[in-house]
Image (spheres, rainbow, N blue to C red):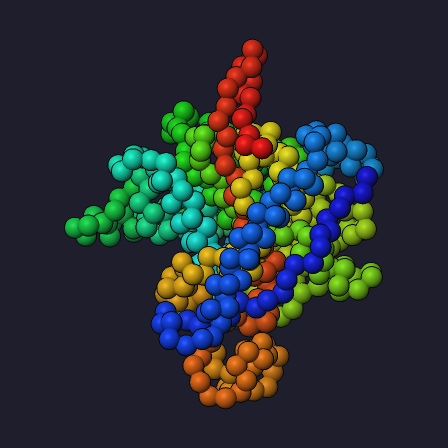
Length: 425
Ligand SMILES: C[S@@+](CC[C@H](N)C(=O)[O-])C[C@H]1O[C@@H](n2cnc3c(N)ncnc32)[C@H](O)[C@@H]1O
């Protein structure tokens, strides 16, 4: 069975914007806002296309079985221990080392994208609630707790943190204790309760590990990690069930994942027999035959300067939509990082600046070299105000990703007690 991982080309604009908030001069600020409006419409059109690509047949099992038959083997969970080992061994870099990193700004930019996504969906959830209502969040594959401050700022009341890497979960819990201590010392500090446990979200039913198994969640977040479950149908189904089953109707599941269409586009662009591509900061290498990629287990080795070096799997997006529907999740957003940046920049400009999500570049300082050629093209080489942007290599790495969001539908039950979901079609 041949799986289509290709899609029409995406636009290749660089993130570049005026960093300060003043509106006095006509520059990329105005242009970006205009692009943002077009992209909201583009996002809607893409959602419609994504839904159409899924087709009417919801039988993922049949697709996956046909796919495994064609390959002559069924895929299992052979890679989870490699991934767990990699993240357990990863040292927590100090501030000094992080500042020196070649991807310092890109990491901040990615962090900003996560903040924008979390803020967007927390705002929608709060809109449905009354002041003082509990807000409960699951941070699935939480890592070392890179999003703890975001949860704190979102004024949630309870957080569940889980990850396959025990060392990361311990660090996450320590960070949480620090936040709590600071809140206790401060008169206006916000406090939220939290629980932590290490486990494989692709193999274990998470609700059985919660302190309260009947807990209703408002938001489930899985940042830069969901793709690990596409090793096999069983793992993907388990992870999506974990994301969906405790979500209240109207709650959201949000994620950032590598964009399989973009990965395959770049692979094809690298040459007819190419198996790898990348630049100074990231590299992707396929070991398998890239002409007959499977639906699950489409494995590649991903390297990102100093932070990731382990196997990952392509997420076939139409299949993700199908699996989501099976668990009552309806796709409400799929946007590439490039599009999401343009769309949310008007509301997120100050935060982007505070988070140092872009590098401040003066064109005349970079009159040679290709990393900031786009700034020269935009501003020329005359002295003037700096422009916030990312280097070409960092931009190429960050635009491998997309953000997506699913809404949990209302449900009723059939005579066998199985849920029947009510999708808005
Ligand atoms: C790139 S890190 C992202 C961490 C965090 N979400 C963030 O955004 O900072 C990916 C995380 O996924 C976790 N992970 C990978 N496979 C997993 C699995 N099967 N179950 C639970 N966690 C997993 C890793 O241990 C790692 O902490």
